[in-house]
Image (cartoon, rainbow, N blue to C red; front, top):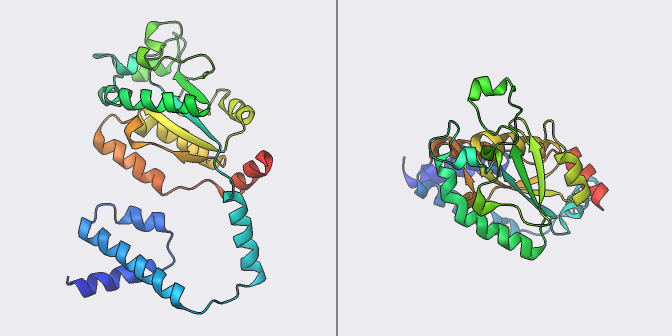
Amino acid sequence: MNDDETIAELLAVVVSGRPEPMVDAGLADAPPAVKAELAQVREVLASLALAESPVMPSPDLRGRIARSLAGRARPPRRAMLVVDMQNDHLTRGRPLEVPRARDIVPALVARLDLARREGVPIVYVLDEHEADDSDLDIWGTHNVKGTPGAEVWPPLAPKPGDLVVRKPTYSAFVRSNLAEVLTKLRVDTLVLTGCATEVGLLATATDALQRGYAVEIPPDAQAGATAASEQIALGLLQLLAPYGSARKALLRELA
């Protein structure tokens, strides 16, 4: 396919009305040259639009724009969640070891220090099971209540002022008090860190988005079981935005 044909196809995609996240996800595996062409097509279209004479939007469109801008006018109120960074996931040889999680510890320590300096609340989300939990029959013994394996990896240990939420399954919102903690913190954006990206982070992020929270996952502070499954999870989350009506309700409550 020559350059003109590539640009024509990309132009058709851009003007199709498909949301940009879906377009970007669909082209995630495209060669860098194609992604560069896409960026150029978007830039040229934006320049052409700016060169046109302004058109007064309809009252309905003006209202929609005003409501959208009202929700973005103030800076986000963030909380940083540290998910499942526990001894049973970071110690070599444990049944549910996530080896790649050890690699993110230095970056995560730096982000935690910065969050504390900036007054961003930190919530440790810890997987915890009773000794007779049937979940252990499936996944093997891990994070049993009261054992050293369930404790936070020592370099990441919580400090005074940090909060701890315990949960028994994938999502931090299920059978925990996380929702109540976040309500008290009055935040609208969650910075998710920890492991494993394709399990706990994916499940927690999906629940958070449906509750109206914006979700940020710093690439250097998350770890999947494998690089491939991690990237699949992150790619899926790029397709999702906070559920609209839940987001509006959350922002109204915070206002």
